[in-house]
Length: 92
Image (cartoon, rainbow, N blue to C red):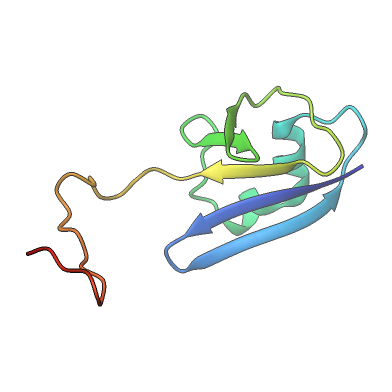
């Protein structure tokens, strides 16, 4: 079956489509994709993963067409980062 693997970092995004066995798990798909060699900083014991934006366990079974996402740690605390004012926004 075909599934997608997605990972994003500040420099860009990677989206892979791969073929995996019907009984594949999230972890097996990630390993098979080769993404761990391309991004050695990914540590599956620390990074969270999900399927279509919902948190998932590494041993979760996949379905055809699933998009496996690898979530990196947040590097800035949103509470301490000033809000960007978009053109046209009035805060008066």
